[in-house]
Amino acid sequence: MQAAARAFADKGFHATTTRDIASGAGLSPAGVYVHFGSKEELLFNLSRIGHESALREVRSAVADAATPTQQLADLVATFSQWHAEQYEIARVVQYEHHHLTPEHHAEVLALRKQIDAVVRGILEAGTREGVFTIDDIGDTSLALLSIAVDVARWYSPTIRRTPAQIGATNAHLALRLVGASS
Amino acid sequence: MQAAARAFADKGFHATTTRDIASGAGLSPAGVYVHFGSKEELLFNLSRIGHESALREVRSAVADAATPTQQLADLVATFSQWHAEQYEIARVVQYEHHHLTPEHHAEVLALRKQIDAVVRGILEAGTREGVFTIDDIGDTSLALLSIAVDVARWYSPTIRRTPAQIGATNAHLALRLVGASS
DNA sequence: TGCGAAACTAAGCAAGCGCTTAGTCACCGT
DNA sequence: ACGGTGACTAAGCGCTTGCTTAGTTTCGCA
Picture (cartoon, rainbow over the protein chains, first blue to last red):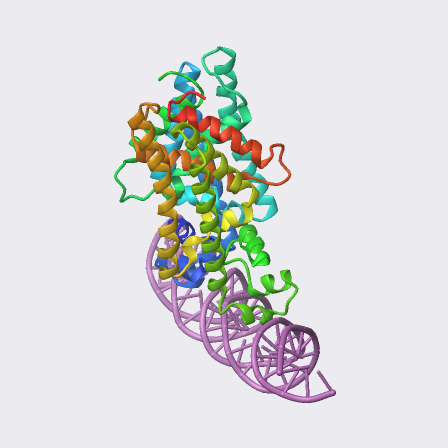
């Protein structure tokens, strides 16, 4: 799965051959099929585990914070940091999920909606309490997720900033986006 | 080229066959090779034209505005709107450029850097004039571009908002990000 | 009207694809 | 010592891929 994640993240699902995955894992081409029934099944496992991991991180960040302001800052920081630290899996999660079969795609879409719902919940709470100033909750949550998700597109282990620093920066920017003082 | 753009945007470069492109254009498989030497050449033409189109839009938006505040708002609005209206080409531009040959890749990377430089220039001017409050110009320009570029990922012609509305919303959010009042 | 060039197609080639089959090997409880 | 189980491979099958070749049609222009 590690070899598949690396290859899918690097070249994309369709450009990756089962022989790439096998040799990356130190196996013969047939060795992969002892553990996985198909290349798509491998993608699905990676995609599902990745989505579940991200959702878990996001939920625990929100649970550990008291106010909507702190919750939003921690969520964006954690989510951004996850997209940097796990950037290979994150790229699979963000860019390859539409190559899944319709059934598998529906399953990960449900997980994506749960992440979305967490963000909207915080924005609604913050608006209700009057600490956020937001025009439209849908548009704003989309922009917040864009900033975090896009980390997977440009992150590289060789850049100046560490994943933790990226998280901190994005959390700061997120609070600005919702009109909350940091 | 239209058929190729649609297919590349929909399924990705490697998942698209030359037969897909040919039938999308109403040609036989060999008919494509009258006009293009290879599938990669088609991708390069699309990618180059797309990048040039985006850069042109961005530059004219900046040229037509007087203050850094207005320039940033117009740039983000125009760039976001472009990613919605031309979302098929935009997806090719954003997600397929790493399937180009090294030489072609370098050529579009140069165009990407020019777009980047325009954004940084505005942020520097606004900071110099004291109308923007920014921690780090590199981090902030990256976040601004993330919001605009990510439009190509989630946009669909069937959604509620029009490209122009998306542009207006993102321009408003951009000004918040740099600490400028709108 | 006739001609050269450009646009196009039918057929297919070599290579690479996802995946299967048949069989070998290492290991573990009895 | 041994039989069963799971991990693994060599070989390769049927199919699709990007692209080519040889030949036909269309078209602008003299």
